[in-house]
View 1: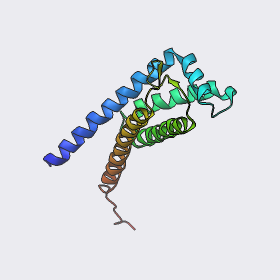
View 2: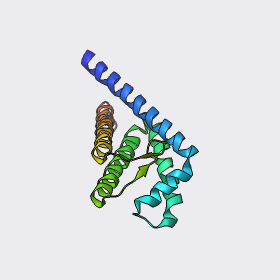
View 3: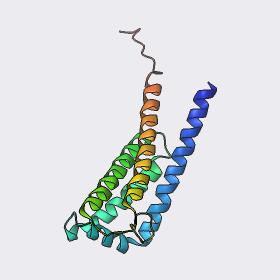
Length: 156
């Protein structure tokens, strides 16, 4: 019982922390949306005309993850979107490293040069691991609540 409550408390703090992280970063990016669009163009993966829609789509996803982690009904979906987003960024930075691109990034809401690709990829892998842990917790919780439902076939 104590172990279950401790685990629940740890995941609650983790959800709150990750939610706050995404909310702060998305808010900073919203204030510097032009820099975010320029960064998308620098990655040179998509046509230039896609920079604006992708910038706003990315921001929307970050806000959805930030707010979705706070409510029980949207927890699993937000964790899934967050896992996908972090996996995408790991892929983007890995391909940038392979291509030898010299990038600056507005990833944390502050324009800064990418000095160490292994560091950038590493901390995103850590974030992806946390998002996968949250996804696991969300799925585990849904299975737990489903098993509590009672079926009554007395009138059949």
